[in-house]
Image 1 (cartoon, helix red, strand yellow):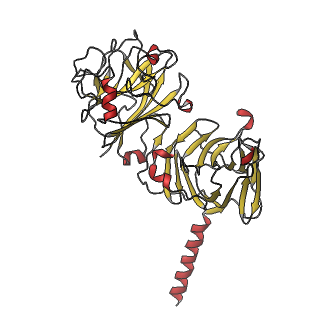
Image 2 (cartoon, rainbow, N blue to C red; image 1 turned 120 degrees about the vertical axis):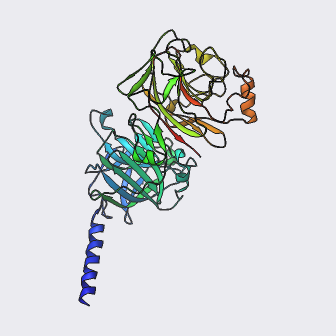
Image 3 (cartoon, rainbow, N blue to C red; image 1 turned 180 degrees about the horizontal axis):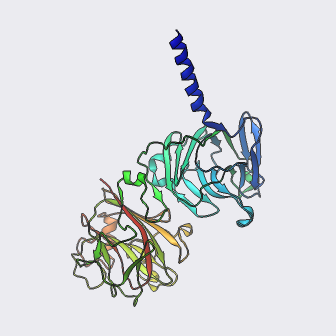
Length: 448
């Protein structure tokens, strides 16, 4: 009996200790520990929940914690009007010298619209989208319309992860902000008829000690740290094609070795050096030693003014071609100042297009200024579906071998090459077009 009693006490202590790791951020009665920033949307406590109500004419409003948090696990429940966009800020800041105190930083997106990006990661008032949830279609199904939903945010070091109702949503590796407040957003509204829309939050709790990352679950990872490969990416089968230091894994197109001129590595960046603006007239194109069939290719690039380049895939080097090696091409171009943007058909030679075949979506939010880093992704699925992504936005979709694809090829400069773009596998190519263009964070995940 004595042993049983002691065992019960130990169990109770362990349970209490485990629970004590969590701290409630909301007492269920009033807004003690919180302060309102920026807009003047209405925040009040009703039935044990914080209720935010939209007010016409007000900018984004935030109810922020008085305390800043670095590494933590945050859990809370929320229920939102089906027509209302909102979010949960974390590691966020408000400083007088930044946009006159505007709240900025990471945001757990709350999106009840058909777009279904709840759980994605947005960078409020700073870098725009960091992780759109169509990168993880399984996570898009987790949100429950008109019901209480459970949000979980895990920030440990550079790893930022989100869950919606226990289902993994986003996984971001980023080191821009290590610490900041947590805030509940009531989004601005542009129409008077939307005044009075509401979102509620309850059971808000945080853990800041004895943190242990949740098991990795294979979610696609966006990593903004240059030439870095996280443990999660390694587990997903991602590998670096450019290590930031050497030319290992690359050679000149149609050559056995890497070009002796025209390409340089400096501070983790691979640069194709400027020459005369022609194709392969200096160092020439470079290709991977290995060939690939189905994959997710990620790369970052920075353009100089009026520059032209490209990332090609399914390059076989089997064509007898005097200029650049032939392959499907993710176009890299200064649309405003390079003449190639006005050639081809309907803009199919512009940035992120499938060169000379399919024009990329002209989403202004996907475009960055010349001299800024861009993030490109090419996804080739085993069933021959292909996607081009630009700075988090999907801008091209097509299927290799489809009637539409073949018709486009027949009208293009590639019509003279039989079965263009249909090789079962090929090299990845970075193009020398005679202009200064910079590359980094080139990595690939092979799909099965």
